[in-house]
Amino acid sequence: MNYHNITHDDMNNGDGLRVVLWLSGCSHHCYNCQNPQTWNPDSGIPFDKSAKQEIFDKLSKDYISGITFSGGDPLHENNLDEVLSLIKEIRTSFPEKTIWLYTGYKFEELINGIHYPLDSKWEDKAWRQSIVKLCDVLIDGEYIDEQRDITLKWRGSSNQRVIDVKQSLTQNKIVLYCN
Ligand code: SF4
Image (cartoon, rainbow, N blue to C red; front, side, top):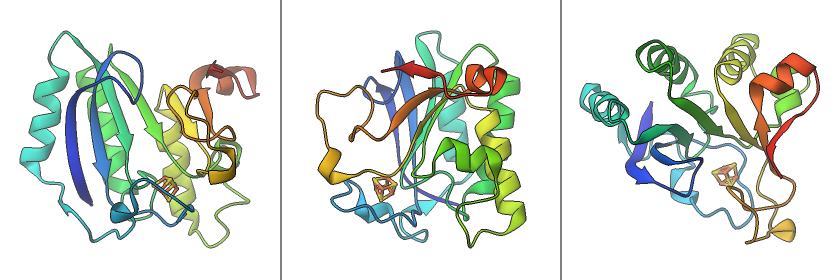
């Protein structure tokens, strides 16, 4: 798994001050994406022990609300096993911190794991499902330039949703974290 950056004290990608991990790899290729340099899964640098330590050091600070996975798409096939194990470790070490994740996939497709992406291997679908279930908030859907709206909180286009994952799973319907 490769990444481009780890940003600290970030206020633009979720509630509170957050650590943001900007991962490499995205197959969605949305028109006018702000981070096309991240599309290639081999771009950036390998996610190694020191990168992980940097994240854990930051998460140990009281004023940090949690971590946001962005990119690229954290659910790109190259990232799945490492993102899942990283999230599991964060959940164990920092149970009070929140986990947000940005993806070009849609919540329903990820949770149902049967329709999309059509070319995915079954284990990739299972991994994606497991990752989503461990998140607090999922911002889903591709960026659609015609629906760009700079007034929206935490997302670029109006088709994208800020989803409360646990409530959505409990109520078996999409529950938004915010409009
Ligand atoms: S899903 Fe996100 S990173 Fe990927 S192309 Fe679309 S806007 Fe860019």
